[in-house]
Length: 117
Image (tube, rainbow, N blue to C red; front, side, top):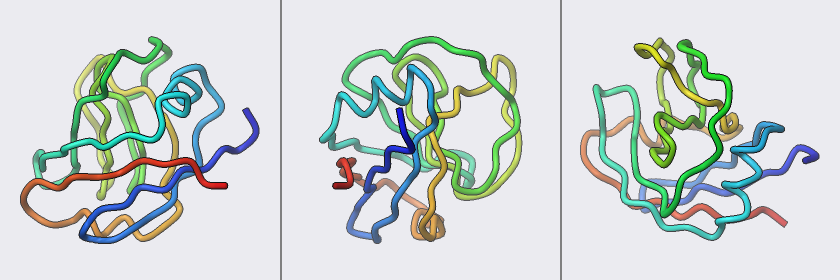
């Protein structure tokens, strides 16, 4: 998969993300377009459920601001700060290239994920 990009939009703003070159990110791309209800978790991330599972891959514990990750097989995460998570870690789906601070707000948000042309 050659540097596929997606748009993540909400009432709070819009960002783009460059997807990782892995099976989980490719499976996410095949699901688009998607609407996901996300909630704030630990004031570092927005989390929401996908309609189906993504493939299991190698996980890592550290993340950076703007990481798009997968916590469990269908739990997508947008990190708006950097840090680390407990084991087993996250699968990296991509990196947000826009201003991820639009998600640094308390409360729930509905996001739309679409392919960029």
